[in-house]
Image (cartoon, rainbow, N blue to C red; front, side, top):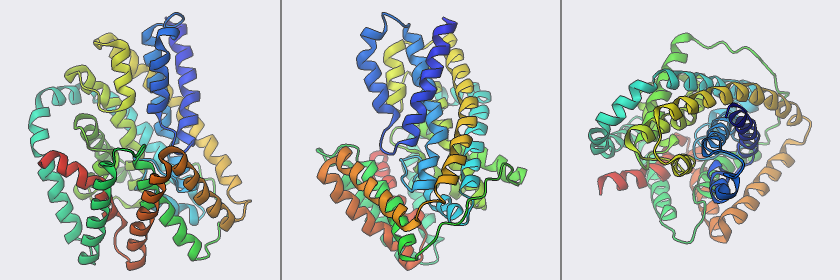
Length: 400
């Protein structure tokens, strides 16, 4: 069994590199493919080993998915907000620093969530019903606070409303596949790249700094905020990583860009680990990969939880090394190409992936999202307001 699980970890890490670095390719896709092939694969591997493969792939993915977000401006749902400070770091020649901070967040969040696993399992078991009753009102209060604290309140309200209506429409389109990819790529990715293109920005030489000065207070605040956010996404249906990040930012103020990147890095990793706690105590799976794990092992036991957490720690430790090595390669390559051509190539790539993953209807969503995403940059209001695209559908889910 040990050799089987070790092989599953190695294969999971390789697939996690692929899904993490490839915009639009999600771990859920690979997980579903594995589930469909499970009857054949079970002749050679135990179902526990197949589940360990998914755990390893998913954890590795959460370490590497910040690379395309920072260097290419192509975010997935968990990294949408990270595009903004990540792009600023990149244009200042510190793209690797942004990556380093997200890796700190991912690994710190992983270790802390494993340590706090029993506590979160207890809270999930006894507090789920209470928490779920009030989350809609909590999100509504957060939205009001976000808008009131903005210097340009009317523009903030407009951006939130437009993105919220757009998000609600897009989420309810029956024939649209992968709705989040064109929606978030337009609001946060392509719109940011177009602003850089219009400003005639040049790509500076990237400094590869292996040490980042980060105050301990900021680090701990970011990591514990990540635990809070990751717990919400793991326990509550419909609450995604970016929504939880917005909620955390209203509670934990003055993190700065460094603390924010640590927070963004930690949420998705924490979310996946604590989804195992939800599966253990509530028998509920909160994301596609964990659903497949549930189908493979059916009723999860304490022994299996110990194995899964061990696999997560091993995969995360390997992923730290891989993410930083690959980040160094990206930092070198991105400076030797023409930046304007690079931006145009990335935009064309996102357009191509949108058509491939979501069809022509997805292309229409991308265009509308870009139009809304440009407004905050033009009127100088907070880009976080564009998270209405996810927060409005979630609030409607909980309040109606």
